[in-house]
Image 1 (cartoon, rainbow, N blue to C red):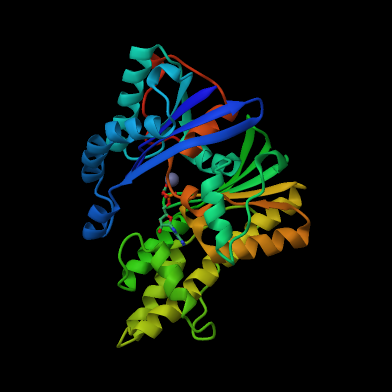
Image 2: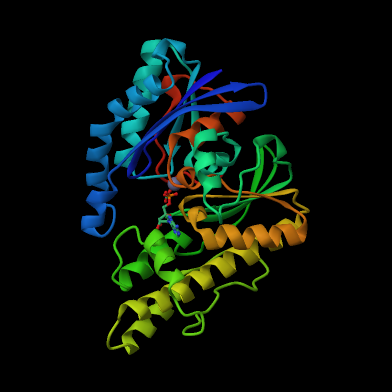
Length: 353
Ligand code: KG4
Ligand code: ZN
């Protein structure tokens, strides 16, 4: 089965081709165009700007994904498509393009929830990307798809979501908890902005934190001991704001110290809650995904804690943590529920059903 994945939920325009056989999938191509540089100038994503860029990129990106995979539209068996959640203008570009291709080539569409898509980056076999990751000394090598065993706890940490899910098998999952206010990525971005770092601040905060003095600041760990699996990060933002208001000169070292303390608090909460869920539900695997899963401290910390609990730990290669169509195609393959083009509509408010 050859699936074309399409992802346009926010500021990335992405198309990918996967080939599935039995339980195994191989990533044939994954092409992503990003409008990040435009949003860096405005300090965040302005939805209309993101949608305009989607329109510019969608066709070239799809064509490149097909040519990289050395196939044509007529070779496709289905289109896996992000239909929500996301920005309506951006989503519509992908949805209408997919519907048109499906209509012209008589293909079924597999509608994919973007958040579930992030989780399925863990099932991709992307040899070239994995090789690059392995070259980095601190990187954790990726375990092949077949070793992901259920029950699995999945932590999705992106710019808009922080959610913990329990997967009993591919088609059966339960939301254990989510963020009550800001998502982890949002906290990174908003606090980074306070510290004068450009959008998206997550990667810059991670870089700055490496030079930070661990003893300088300590911030609260919201909801860390609560009996549920919910998260809250807006209090952390207020705590950092208060601290910055006391400081006259926010020099580079102080920014690094504050970045370290922020990251320490975020990672601590994410790791504790994920491990608590893994332990409670006797998980065989822990999977992380979403833009914040690219954070090396989170990857390293969870890896260590999962080893202690004797649970397998999975994390996608860093380039598959942020938005991409390969993960959407993967989710479509493992949750194959095709519909005809006329039944697909964008749903910007989609959550977990
Ligand atoms: O999953 P994603 O690409 O888009 C959404 O679906 O939201 O996630 C983007 C988020 C941004 O908030 C960005 O700052 C954060 O992921 N992020 C990071 C890192 N790389 C991206 N946060 C912390 N450390 C990183 N290395
Ligand atoms: Zn995303």
